[in-house]
Length: 228
Length: 198
Image 1 (cartoon, chains in turn green, red):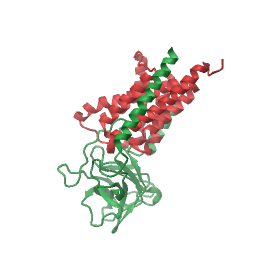
Image 2 (cartoon, rainbow over the protein chains, first blue to last red):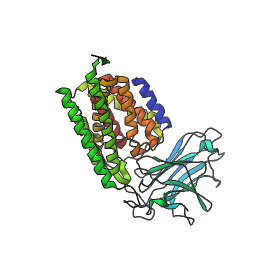
Image 3 (cartoon, rainbow over the protein chains, first blue to last red):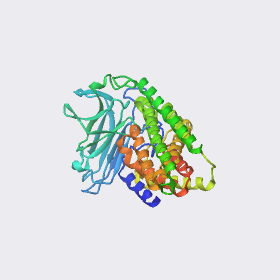
Image 4 (tube, each protein chain N blue to C red):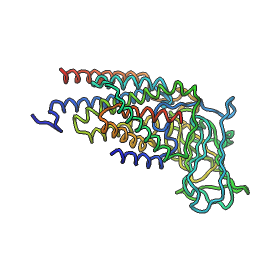
């Protein structure tokens, strides 16, 4: 049983996203979000690779240095093919002119590029080798959607919540400019705090406390009847 | 008198009720943490401490007690943590995330340990015992492992379910082998600490 569980653990780690936080669980130690133009600017990240043939590119990641990282790019085996060395970079940029039509940008826009020594831009070889991008937002409610700027239009990607709660991930077959977008129905902009509509918290908290008290009393009675 | 698994019927009925109440309580505690944590629940220390209090209250009300700390159980926990950290290192060794500063770790560490210990007190302590009495060790292992995985969804998303399910099975296996909640508690706490200190 223990051997099986240990093997399962190792296997899951091989396929789990890097965003699985503080290894397993616990409270996330998260620094305040670093916005472009603030006194503590966000970091960039670059990684250089040598020439790769089909299938020879090995799993890799490019990660910014915040805690937790505000941008992470996860690349699987065979993602890129290039006869010359290339560099993958993550760079926070000023918001481009076109704005998302379905909401407002939360946090920074990040430019994710893979560029060869001769200036050619690379993309993942095919959809099966899509890159996984994780971006940290300034909050998690409402849930953000990761979008990619395609020319003048922002395209939404299938986005999952990951990491320390305010990190979101999406797979993308193309690199470019990416941002998290707060949907218009969520109310105010992407800044932190309790903006936007949502269920009333105080009654919910009170209700849950009442339920917990009732359950606790029920357990005490059960325990007494058992020992009595 | 009919019995299940060698336990008298009255005991199994009580254990069934206790199991149900503990699971309901766990759901309530997770909901409370999510509600209190607001927009950044996984990073909210007040919500985490509220969660710790709720879990310990539930476990204590169900009759769980810490018991005597024995060296061999602690040793089993340390070995258990070594496997958890080793699996992370072997499986995702290239994915080290940046470490935080020592000042942050100074307050973060006791909070993380408190959360881990409270989760184990309820899951592999009170709930495992109740389920084992009611339906046997396999059901106890399965239910507590699934509960462990599901309870982390509001914090880390569904992406973390496979990993937390595997961890739940490992910690539950430690509980089965050692017969005590101490070993999984030590393993869980050390593995969580490793996430910040390594």
